[in-house]
Image (cartoon, rainbow, N blue to C red; front, side, top):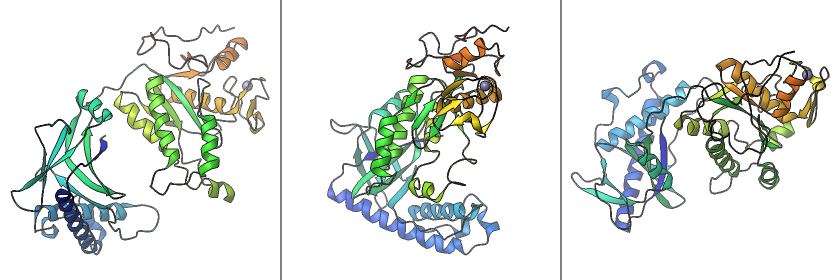
Length: 394
Ligand SMILES: [Zn+2]
């Protein structure tokens, strides 16, 4: 896993001109090598790097450009689905490896990170000032290390240096509860503790943007998902479970749904959570979503009639709750059964088991009340006995 950070470049005109010319060279070379490699048969493209005789032979930068071209061709050739179209590098960027750049071992009053980069001339490097930002400092303080690559990139007329960090290794945490997440593309995100995340804003966003991209390339929904992912990991501090997406999503939906939700970044939240939770030692698991919104979490009865729009009401035992909460609880329970985590269930479900003297489908589970924004202070990493709700079997 690696983290990447985009840092704004504060360089004078002369240095910017150098960046521009290196990027021109890079893009031209990458595209030239793509043409060359594209003619090669599949079996030859299998290698991770281009064979020495086909590699860029001019400067070191040309060599790196040829490797980049190889990777781009290879990524397309490896695709299992969809048409294989010859790739083209359109972005204005270039990459340097450890032989072509170093981080400066000095800081100045204004800039706390300097990148001494290749300038196109042998033996002459240019010092490029950038500023670290809060998250980058956070990870550096916790023992993350810079990786030996840097990418310079021009976005909307501004130059950025993209640096990569390897986070400090984290042991996966063992006996931690799991919260289930149900994503409803009309109402927002609901978790198995019964909490609804950003319902109002979600609706506004949907009406305002129809999940469109903004011209500057930002996707407001992705930004919202990024914020949510951060809050979920920080506030819950536990494992998180999502639905597997192969069975849901765009397939089998109406044309109107597909049109309205064309730009919806499916799976973005789960992917983002996976990165952030992984850094803290928490796991992100996916479960089979079949029937999660039609199965009664209390008695296990599965029937389509259990769900009527927003409301879930079990036709066998009478348990009722908000339909998305039921979905989220089922996801948490499935994750618990599959991985041995203790699922977090909304109090109503635990009450349902107790009142009806039903043996829960999992041996141990946890109840967090709806209004708790985080688990009790003594909860984190607790050993059993935990805060499992007392259940008496009749
Ligand atoms: Zn039931």
